[in-house]
Length: 349
Picture 1 (cartoon, rainbow, N blue to C red):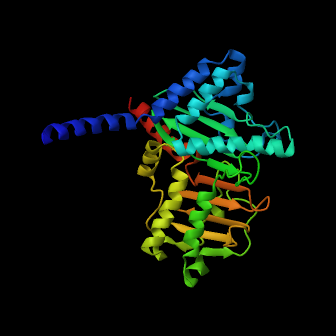
Picture 2 (cartoon, one colour):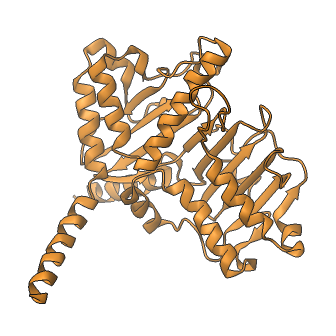
Picture 3 (cartoon, rainbow, N blue to C red):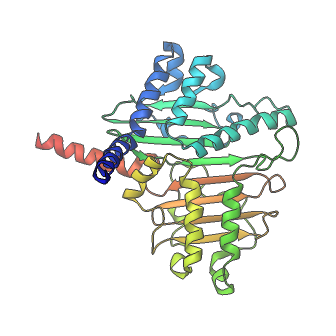
Protein backbone atom coordinates (compact mmCIF):
# COMPACT_ATOMS: atom_id res chain seq x y z
CA UNK A 1 0.00 0.00 0.00
CA UNK A 2 2.84 2.40 0.91
CA UNK A 3 4.55 1.60 -2.39
CA UNK A 4 1.36 2.38 -4.32
CA UNK A 5 1.00 5.70 -2.47
CA UNK A 6 4.63 6.58 -3.13
CA UNK A 7 4.23 5.83 -6.83
CA UNK A 8 0.99 7.84 -6.93
CA UNK A 9 2.58 10.84 -5.22
CA UNK A 10 5.65 10.58 -7.47
CA UNK A 11 3.45 10.57 -10.56
CA UNK A 12 1.48 13.52 -9.18
CA UNK A 13 4.76 15.33 -8.56
CA UNK A 14 5.83 14.76 -12.16
CA UNK A 15 2.52 16.15 -13.39
CA UNK A 16 2.80 19.20 -11.15
CA UNK A 17 6.37 19.84 -12.31
CA UNK A 18 5.24 19.58 -15.94
CA UNK A 19 2.48 22.12 -15.41
CA UNK A 20 4.75 24.32 -13.31
CA UNK A 21 6.71 25.29 -16.45
CA UNK A 22 3.62 26.71 -18.14
CA UNK A 23 3.62 30.52 -17.53
CA UNK A 24 5.41 31.33 -20.80
CA UNK A 25 3.04 29.06 -22.73
CA UNK A 26 0.07 30.64 -20.99
CA UNK A 27 1.33 34.08 -21.98
CA UNK A 28 1.61 32.94 -25.61
CA UNK A 29 -1.91 31.51 -25.61
CA UNK A 30 -3.44 34.53 -23.85
CA UNK A 31 -1.70 37.08 -26.08
CA UNK A 32 -2.61 35.20 -29.27
CA UNK A 33 -6.26 35.06 -28.27
CA UNK A 34 -6.20 38.75 -27.48
CA UNK A 35 -4.62 39.65 -30.83
CA UNK A 36 -7.05 37.40 -32.71
CA UNK A 37 -9.95 39.36 -31.22
CA UNK A 38 -8.72 42.63 -32.76
CA UNK A 39 -9.51 43.92 -36.22
CA UNK A 40 -6.67 45.27 -38.37
CA UNK A 41 -7.00 48.94 -37.39
CA UNK A 42 -7.16 48.25 -33.68
CA UNK A 43 -4.34 45.69 -33.83
CA UNK A 44 -2.01 48.40 -35.14
CA UNK A 45 -2.36 50.19 -31.80
CA UNK A 46 -1.71 47.07 -29.75
CA UNK A 47 1.15 45.33 -31.57
CA UNK A 48 4.66 46.62 -32.28
CA UNK A 49 7.85 45.17 -33.72
CA UNK A 50 9.95 43.54 -31.02
CA UNK A 51 12.82 45.97 -31.60
CA UNK A 52 10.54 49.03 -31.62
CA UNK A 53 11.88 51.66 -29.20
CA UNK A 54 8.44 51.76 -27.61
CA UNK A 55 9.21 48.47 -25.84
CA UNK A 56 11.49 50.30 -23.40
CA UNK A 57 9.36 53.44 -23.21
CA UNK A 58 7.72 52.66 -19.88
CA UNK A 59 5.97 55.11 -17.52
CA UNK A 60 3.98 55.10 -14.30
CA UNK A 61 2.49 58.59 -14.68
CA UNK A 62 -1.07 59.15 -15.96
CA UNK A 63 -1.09 59.20 -19.76
CA UNK A 64 -1.72 62.94 -20.08
CA UNK A 65 1.64 63.66 -18.45
CA UNK A 66 3.64 61.44 -20.84
CA UNK A 67 5.30 63.45 -23.57
CA UNK A 68 4.97 63.90 -26.46
CA UNK A 69 1.97 61.72 -27.38
CA UNK A 70 0.75 60.11 -24.19
CA UNK A 71 0.74 56.38 -23.44
CA UNK A 72 0.79 54.00 -26.40
CA UNK A 73 -0.85 50.62 -26.72
CA UNK A 74 -4.53 49.68 -26.76
CA UNK A 75 -6.49 50.87 -23.73
CA UNK A 76 -9.26 48.97 -21.97
CA UNK A 77 -11.47 51.93 -22.85
CA UNK A 78 -11.06 51.14 -26.56
CA UNK A 79 -11.78 47.41 -26.17
CA UNK A 80 -15.00 45.51 -26.58
CA UNK A 81 -16.36 43.53 -23.65
CA UNK A 82 -14.80 40.26 -24.85
CA UNK A 83 -11.45 41.93 -25.52
CA UNK A 84 -11.36 43.30 -21.95
CA UNK A 85 -11.88 39.76 -20.66
CA UNK A 86 -8.99 38.53 -22.79
CA UNK A 87 -6.82 41.44 -21.64
CA UNK A 88 -7.33 40.49 -18.01
CA UNK A 89 -6.60 36.88 -18.97
CA UNK A 90 -3.19 37.98 -20.26
CA UNK A 91 -2.55 39.84 -17.01
CA UNK A 92 -3.47 36.71 -15.06
CA UNK A 93 -1.03 34.59 -17.07
CA UNK A 94 1.89 36.36 -15.37
CA UNK A 95 0.71 37.47 -11.94
CA UNK A 96 0.02 35.45 -8.83
CA UNK A 97 -3.35 35.64 -7.10
CA UNK A 98 -1.90 38.24 -4.75
CA UNK A 99 -0.40 40.24 -7.63
CA UNK A 100 -3.64 40.18 -9.61
CA UNK A 101 -5.60 41.37 -6.58
CA UNK A 102 -3.09 44.16 -5.98
CA UNK A 103 -3.19 45.22 -9.64
CA UNK A 104 -7.00 45.27 -9.47
CA UNK A 105 -6.88 47.43 -6.34
CA UNK A 106 -4.51 49.90 -8.03
CA UNK A 107 -6.84 50.20 -11.02
CA UNK A 108 -9.79 50.68 -8.65
CA UNK A 109 -7.97 53.58 -6.99
CA UNK A 110 -8.33 55.50 -10.26
CA UNK A 111 -12.12 55.38 -9.85
CA UNK A 112 -11.76 56.53 -6.24
CA UNK A 113 -9.59 59.46 -7.39
CA UNK A 114 -12.10 60.32 -10.12
CA UNK A 115 -14.94 60.45 -7.61
CA UNK A 116 -12.80 62.63 -5.34
CA UNK A 117 -11.31 64.97 -7.97
CA UNK A 118 -13.59 64.74 -11.00
CA UNK A 119 -10.51 64.75 -13.28
CA UNK A 120 -11.20 63.05 -16.63
CA UNK A 121 -7.71 61.51 -16.75
CA UNK A 122 -8.59 59.49 -13.62
CA UNK A 123 -10.11 56.52 -15.38
CA UNK A 124 -9.87 52.80 -14.48
CA UNK A 125 -10.09 51.99 -18.19
CA UNK A 126 -6.96 53.94 -19.13
CA UNK A 127 -4.74 50.88 -18.80
CA UNK A 128 -3.04 49.72 -21.97
CA UNK A 129 -1.78 46.48 -23.47
CA UNK A 130 1.17 46.49 -25.86
CA UNK A 131 2.58 43.35 -27.48
CA UNK A 132 6.06 43.44 -28.97
CA UNK A 133 6.89 40.93 -31.69
CA UNK A 134 4.93 37.77 -32.43
CA UNK A 135 3.92 35.62 -29.44
CA UNK A 136 5.43 32.16 -29.90
CA UNK A 137 7.18 29.42 -27.98
CA UNK A 138 10.26 29.93 -30.15
CA UNK A 139 11.96 33.27 -30.67
CA UNK A 140 11.79 36.56 -28.81
CA UNK A 141 8.76 38.64 -27.93
CA UNK A 142 7.38 40.66 -25.04
CA UNK A 143 4.36 42.45 -23.67
CA UNK A 144 3.35 45.22 -21.31
CA UNK A 145 0.31 46.06 -19.22
CA UNK A 146 0.50 49.69 -18.13
CA UNK A 147 -1.41 52.64 -16.79
CA UNK A 148 -1.16 55.07 -13.88
CA UNK A 149 0.79 53.44 -11.04
CA UNK A 150 1.10 50.09 -12.78
CA UNK A 151 3.73 48.98 -15.29
CA UNK A 152 4.34 45.28 -15.88
CA UNK A 153 6.91 44.32 -18.51
CA UNK A 154 7.74 40.79 -19.64
CA UNK A 155 10.37 39.64 -22.12
CA UNK A 156 10.44 36.02 -23.32
CA UNK A 157 13.01 34.01 -25.25
CA UNK A 158 12.26 30.53 -26.63
CA UNK A 159 9.38 29.77 -24.33
CA UNK A 160 11.02 31.04 -21.16
CA UNK A 161 10.32 34.14 -19.12
CA UNK A 162 13.64 35.92 -19.19
CA UNK A 163 12.68 39.23 -17.60
CA UNK A 164 9.86 40.69 -15.53
CA UNK A 165 11.40 44.11 -14.97
CA UNK A 166 10.76 46.98 -14.79
CA UNK A 167 7.99 45.98 -12.39
CA UNK A 168 6.15 48.91 -10.84
CA UNK A 169 3.22 49.06 -8.43
CA UNK A 170 2.02 52.37 -7.00
CA UNK A 171 -0.89 53.54 -4.88
CA UNK A 172 -2.62 56.86 -4.35
CA UNK A 173 -4.20 56.77 -1.89
CA UNK A 174 -2.26 53.94 -0.28
CA UNK A 175 -4.93 53.85 2.42
CA UNK A 176 -8.59 54.71 1.78
CA UNK A 177 -10.23 56.29 4.82
CA UNK A 178 -13.73 57.10 3.60
CA UNK A 179 -16.47 56.01 1.23
CA UNK A 180 -17.58 52.55 0.24
CA UNK A 181 -13.97 51.34 -0.12
CA UNK A 182 -12.84 52.60 3.29
CA UNK A 183 -10.21 50.26 4.70
CA UNK A 184 -8.64 49.42 1.33
CA UNK A 185 -4.83 49.42 1.61
CA UNK A 186 -2.23 48.92 -1.11
CA UNK A 187 1.56 48.60 -0.66
CA UNK A 188 1.36 48.98 3.11
CA UNK A 189 2.79 45.50 3.78
CA UNK A 190 6.11 46.49 2.23
CA UNK A 191 6.38 49.59 4.41
CA UNK A 192 5.44 47.75 7.60
CA UNK A 193 7.90 44.91 6.94
CA UNK A 194 10.72 47.35 6.15
CA UNK A 195 9.83 49.43 9.18
CA UNK A 196 10.11 46.34 11.39
CA UNK A 197 13.53 45.55 9.94
CA UNK A 198 14.99 49.04 10.20
CA UNK A 199 13.56 49.68 13.68
CA UNK A 200 15.32 46.51 14.86
CA UNK A 201 18.75 47.85 13.91
CA UNK A 202 21.26 48.74 16.58
CA UNK A 203 22.71 52.24 16.84
CA UNK A 204 25.84 51.21 14.94
CA UNK A 205 23.77 49.46 12.25
CA UNK A 206 21.54 52.53 11.83
CA UNK A 207 24.59 54.74 11.28
CA UNK A 208 25.26 52.77 8.10
CA UNK A 209 21.68 52.04 7.06
CA UNK A 210 20.07 55.49 7.42
CA UNK A 211 21.53 57.67 4.68
CA UNK A 212 19.61 60.86 5.38
CA UNK A 213 16.98 62.29 7.69
CA UNK A 214 15.24 63.64 4.60
CA UNK A 215 13.56 61.31 2.12
CA UNK A 216 13.91 61.86 -1.63
CA UNK A 217 10.72 62.97 -3.36
CA UNK A 218 10.41 59.65 -5.22
CA UNK A 219 12.23 56.42 -6.00
CA UNK A 220 15.69 57.24 -7.28
CA UNK A 221 15.63 54.86 -10.27
CA UNK A 222 12.87 56.95 -11.87
CA UNK A 223 11.33 56.01 -15.19
CA UNK A 224 14.46 55.71 -17.29
CA UNK A 225 14.73 52.55 -19.39
CA UNK A 226 18.12 51.82 -17.80
CA UNK A 227 18.96 52.33 -14.14
CA UNK A 228 21.87 54.70 -13.68
CA UNK A 229 24.41 52.50 -11.90
CA UNK A 230 26.38 55.54 -10.73
CA UNK A 231 23.48 56.41 -8.44
CA UNK A 232 23.77 53.09 -6.61
CA UNK A 233 27.37 51.89 -6.93
CA UNK A 234 29.51 51.61 -4.97
CA UNK A 235 26.66 50.64 -2.63
CA UNK A 236 25.69 52.80 0.34
CA UNK A 237 23.90 51.44 3.36
CA UNK A 238 24.17 48.47 5.66
CA UNK A 239 25.56 45.23 4.19
CA UNK A 240 23.70 41.99 4.76
CA UNK A 241 26.83 40.59 6.40
CA UNK A 242 26.19 42.91 9.37
CA UNK A 243 22.61 41.66 9.94
CA UNK A 244 21.78 39.07 12.57
CA UNK A 245 19.81 35.91 11.60
CA UNK A 246 16.41 37.38 12.57
CA UNK A 247 17.08 40.55 10.58
CA UNK A 248 18.10 38.47 7.58
CA UNK A 249 14.77 36.66 7.82
CA UNK A 250 12.88 39.96 7.83
CA UNK A 251 14.94 41.11 4.85
CA UNK A 252 13.99 37.94 2.95
CA UNK A 253 10.32 38.53 3.82
CA UNK A 254 10.57 42.10 2.51
CA UNK A 255 12.02 41.05 -0.86
CA UNK A 256 9.44 38.25 -0.99
CA UNK A 257 6.68 40.89 -1.01
CA UNK A 258 8.03 42.20 -4.33
CA UNK A 259 8.48 38.75 -5.86
CA UNK A 260 5.20 37.21 -4.70
CA UNK A 261 3.20 39.50 -6.99
CA UNK A 262 4.32 37.29 -9.89
CA UNK A 263 3.61 33.63 -10.52
CA UNK A 264 6.04 31.49 -8.51
CA UNK A 265 7.28 29.69 -11.63
CA UNK A 266 8.30 33.05 -13.12
CA UNK A 267 10.26 33.98 -10.01
CA UNK A 268 11.86 30.53 -9.89
CA UNK A 269 13.22 30.95 -13.43
CA UNK A 270 14.57 34.42 -12.66
CA UNK A 271 16.16 33.55 -9.31
CA UNK A 272 17.91 30.52 -10.80
CA UNK A 273 19.98 32.91 -12.90
CA UNK A 274 20.37 35.70 -10.37
CA UNK A 275 19.69 35.37 -6.63
CA UNK A 276 17.08 37.79 -5.35
CA UNK A 277 19.23 38.23 -2.24
CA UNK A 278 22.98 37.92 -2.60
CA UNK A 279 24.49 36.45 0.61
CA UNK A 280 27.45 38.83 0.45
CA UNK A 281 26.58 41.74 -1.84
CA UNK A 282 23.13 42.84 -0.59
CA UNK A 283 22.71 46.27 1.05
CA UNK A 284 19.75 47.93 2.76
CA UNK A 285 19.25 51.69 3.08
CA UNK A 286 16.66 54.11 4.49
CA UNK A 287 16.08 57.85 4.15
CA UNK A 288 13.59 60.03 5.98
CA UNK A 289 11.70 59.35 9.16
CA UNK A 290 11.28 55.96 10.80
CA UNK A 291 7.74 57.11 11.58
CA UNK A 292 5.55 55.75 8.78
CA UNK A 293 3.26 58.78 9.09
CA UNK A 294 6.16 60.92 7.87
CA UNK A 295 8.03 60.87 4.55
CA UNK A 296 10.17 57.77 4.13
CA UNK A 297 12.16 55.90 1.51
CA UNK A 298 13.99 52.58 1.57
CA UNK A 299 15.74 50.21 -0.78
CA UNK A 300 17.30 46.80 -0.99
CA UNK A 301 19.98 46.34 -3.61
CA UNK A 302 22.07 43.42 -4.74
CA UNK A 303 24.73 43.26 -7.47
CA UNK A 304 21.83 42.48 -9.85
CA UNK A 305 18.56 43.83 -8.48
CA UNK A 306 17.12 46.98 -6.96
CA UNK A 307 13.96 47.00 -4.83
CA UNK A 308 12.80 50.55 -4.00
CA UNK A 309 9.95 52.12 -2.07
CA UNK A 310 8.95 55.73 -1.43
CA UNK A 311 5.99 57.29 0.37
CA UNK A 312 6.51 61.04 0.51
CA UNK A 313 3.56 62.72 -1.21
CA UNK A 314 -0.11 63.56 -0.57
CA UNK A 315 0.09 63.61 3.22
CA UNK A 316 2.28 60.47 3.15
CA UNK A 317 -0.46 58.47 1.47
CA UNK A 318 1.07 57.97 -1.98
CA UNK A 319 3.40 54.99 -2.35
CA UNK A 320 5.68 53.83 -5.18
CA UNK A 321 7.34 50.39 -5.25
CA UNK A 322 9.68 49.34 -8.06
CA UNK A 323 11.74 46.26 -8.89
CA UNK A 324 14.55 46.89 -11.36
CA UNK A 325 17.40 44.82 -12.83
CA UNK A 326 20.57 46.89 -13.14
CA UNK A 327 21.76 45.16 -16.32
CA UNK A 328 18.74 43.14 -17.38
CA UNK A 329 15.63 45.35 -17.54
CA UNK A 330 13.56 44.30 -20.57
CA UNK A 331 15.72 41.16 -20.74
CA UNK A 332 18.59 43.24 -22.06
CA UNK A 333 21.47 41.06 -20.83
CA UNK A 334 19.81 37.74 -21.67
CA UNK A 335 18.83 38.93 -25.13
CA UNK A 336 22.46 39.88 -25.76
CA UNK A 337 23.55 36.36 -24.76
CA UNK A 338 20.80 34.83 -26.89
CA UNK A 339 21.71 36.81 -30.00
CA UNK A 340 25.40 36.03 -29.54
CA UNK A 341 24.69 32.29 -29.21
CA UNK A 342 22.33 32.39 -32.17
CA UNK A 343 24.93 34.18 -34.29
CA UNK A 344 27.61 31.62 -33.40
CA UNK A 345 25.23 28.79 -34.33
CA UNK A 346 24.54 30.39 -37.70
CA UNK A 347 28.29 30.80 -38.30
CA UNK A 348 28.84 27.09 -37.55
CA UNK A 349 26.06 26.14 -39.96
